[in-house]
Structures are given as C-alpha cells and as structure tokens.
Image: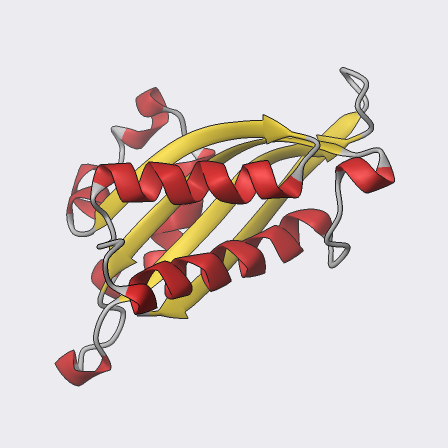
Length: 144
C-alpha cells in the first residue's frame, strides 16, 4: 500500500523533520524523493526553487519535456492549496515559508499506468510580518 500513496508520502516528508522521519524508514525508502525549503513573496521564485532542486537531484530528466511539464503542473496544483486558490503572494502582501517534498513513484499496481510525481508544500503563509503567518499545506499529483 505505501508504494501506491505517493501524495501521502510527499506530505509526510514535507511536514516531518529528520528526527520525526526515523519512525517511517521503510515508507520513505520505497520511492524517489527530493526535498527543500523556500521562502519568498514571489511565486515564480517558489516554482523555480522546486524545479531547480528536482533537476539537480536527478529526480526528473530535464531533457524529456513531459517530465518537466508534469513537475510544473504538480507544483501549480500544490500551490493552489497553499494559497487557497488565489495565485498571488507578493501582489497581495503575502509571503510564504515552505518546506517541499517531491516524490516520484508508481501509484498503480498496473505497470502500464507508469510513473507519477507528487509535490507537497508545508509551512506558513501570511502578512510579511514575522509572527502573523499561519500554517498551510498543498499537494499536487501529476502523471509523467
């Protein structure tokens, strides 16, 4: 079952720190994972931070367009959750501080369904004043 839940794995990985992850050693070893952090008032910087981390880690092959395309759409879907459907941060005087996890795996038992990507964000969003932000989470899943 754990192999089939790449979104759940991405959310847990983004939310848990290294000490908390030790409780799930097998869960995180069954898929490919890339992680990172980003804080910004610029949505494009958030997108770029995830894309750069994933490409540098080798999680996707940047020479294959469909892999980059799948990543981009999973990122956008995850950002919708964080921003509650309002695709703007700096323009609305909001800032984010997020941890992210990107998981690549095969969520279906039928091998013909292929590989998928799950992008999860967990962190804070709010006014650009320390202490006035609140927690937020977002998940995007897309086929490669």
